[in-house]
Length: 353
Image (cartoon, rainbow, N blue to C red; front, side, top):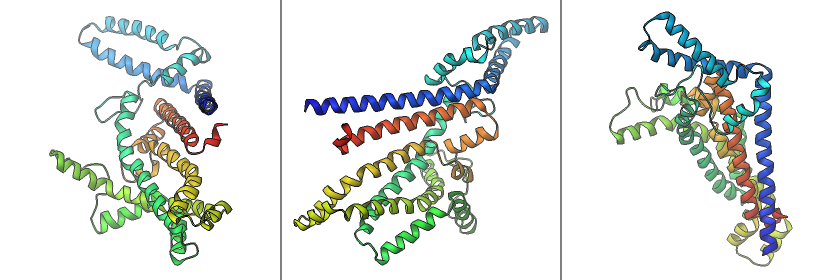
């Protein structure tokens, strides 16, 4: 038992350190490229300009003389230049810039603001994140459950009509672009049948009653959620089916059946446990990827999530916001990978050594 615990601790420590090194490496290379290309200077200058604009609005009410106001602003500007490190070469600012990003001191966006009017990047991200979780993460969870139950059920009927139909459905759903399916659903269900709204999270104006507001939200999320389920469920079903069918044909499974063990026990102990690591990988990485949002799907449906935010940041060339989103997505991926390592050790003790 002591050796087992030692192996577990050693394995998780090694994997954790490796992932932290990966995160820091990605962050260092990103900051290095931004500094060498002059993007970091533009980001800092935009932050300085934004802060100076706010200070000017405050001083205008206190200093009436224009010349004195300009002198005060110039003095403050020089102080800010030193504070932001713009008086030094970009490579001398690398450690400080990395520290700011690691501590999520992400600064202000240049062209995008939150629904409440704030330009703080952390506020913008935290405002959009729940919307993506509601849509994309929910779709991933539903698709996982569909894939798990339907995939394992179809795997017990290899070569049947049901198996062929599911394989055909999986191929079609995988081949159809999600954004194209979204446009078709908008055309059919929003414009032709008028069953769902075609854009946004709420009606304009939104209901004030909490219950009606909740029902309005469900009405708006239904069509993009349905689109993601149709587009992604086929691949989840097929992956689970393929893993289960392959494992079910292994010799150790046939031996278990030859011993007369109940089929439910064979499925649970000899098949599901073997395919669990692969399924866990898809689920955890799918959930981590969902935090980044579905860029094209959210944009097509006008859904104000992380995906649409990334698209808006790219279109408006908001370098600071792009850098912040890239770091957040990388951080979420690293956390997901470490979670996978822990789950692997629990599911398969052989991974410890």
